[in-house]
Every structure is written in structure tokens, then in C-alpha cells.
Length: 283
Ligand SMILES: [Zn+2]
Image (tube, rainbow, N blue to C red):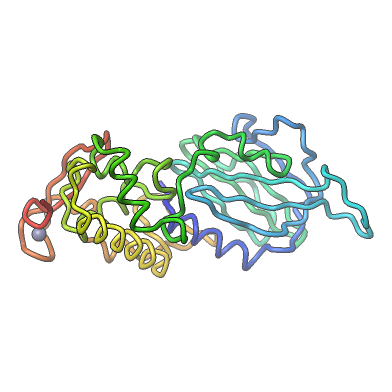
């Protein structure tokens, strides 16, 4: 499942290639995947910007009308893309036959297309009038960005207090507490901070929380630098894999020796998710 570093890498590859391109037409091959409750038009949208919030991508679109001195509200829209488990956004230089799991295609003015491909089909593309994206309750309740200014040490201390009975791994995965972290980066951050994933958030010392705050930011920043982690599905907007899987310490490493102490990495379930940790390094 793409997490913050993967979604950010996709954003960066796409904005370089398609900012100020026009989506001439949005073609939907599977009606469940494209959600358009306001009946927003499906043609002629200029891509003004592509933003990321948590694991969501937001395309700021404006009607491509030459000499439009007084654009109306309907001349703007926000397209939210949530990749969920296996969603991909893939740029094609030419119009080709849609792949088996391509559910939505954006035909671009450069003669190519941006294809939303999703084997599991949990991902969604939703069109909103500007501002209405906050009607999406998953989006509206997102916690602060872990690499942003709102994610302070004090915020994390208070959040661990608020969710004190939850495991610290559960807090890291909770999108209402912190936006964008999933299984990979929760496990890696906890390893680097030396915290056992099942520890109750309310039991952690301020010093440990401060260290975790630093390690969360460090892991995410490094992962963006390596263009994300590719296990099964993830590729960026150009179809390229990331490299952070070469730098993982515990995630999917159960049975391997810990790089720090040689103890065998174990796998357990925490917060309903497979969790990888070193029983010696993480207390
Ligand atoms: Zn160890």
C-alpha cells in the first residue's frame, strides 16, 4: 500500500510531466472507481497543481477556456485520488489499449494519457467542487503532516496521552493522529527509536516520544529520497520502482538477523497488522 513517501514520489514525477497539461477527457471503464456526485464535467480541465495530503493526491483543475476573464465556481474542481491498496497512476506517452486493470483514463493534450490502474479496485478518483473535498470524512479528519510544522514534539506527546491505551504502533497508523504513515514506516520508525510496537502509547517517556518524533521524520525523509519502497506493486508515475526496500531494517525481515544486534527479527500482529521488530533492540 503506498504510504506518504510513495504518494509524494508519484506527485513529484507527475507534476514535472503534466502540470499545465489539459485533461481533454476523463474516460471511466469501471463506474465504481470514478465518484462524481456533483456531476462535474469530464472534459477540458487544465492541471494547475498537484498536492498531497497524507496518502491522498489532490489535483487542482481549472476549465481550459481561452480568454475567460471571469471564471465561475464551476470552472474549478478538485480531483482527489486515493490509491488505497494497489492503485497506480501511470503516464503513457501515447494512447494505447487500456490495460486489464485500468479503470479511469485521463486523455492528455500532449497526446498521451494518465491511467488509473488498480488490481484490487479499492482506490477511488473523486471529483469535488473546490472546498467540498472536506466532505470526505477520511480526508477531513486527517491529522497533521509528519514532515510539516504542525507535527511538533509537544503534539506527539499530547497525542500519545490522548490515545494512551492504544499501542504506539496503532497511534502511528491512525490517520486521525498523524497523516500518511502505514505499516512499513511505522515498523521502521519504531525500530530506530528502540520501541516495542505493542507498548501502550500512554506509557512512553517524553524522551522516548521525542526520539520517536525524530525517527519518524528521519525515516520518511530518507524514504522520499530513495523514491519510496517497492515490494509488490508500487511504482511511481513513470512506472519506476523505488529503492527504500534496500534500506529497511525490520519490515518484512522476519527470520533475518537484526542489523544492529544479530537477534532474529520477529513478526507479530499489532493493531490488526503484521508487525516486524527486533526483540532485543525494541523494549
Ligand atoms: Zn536488534
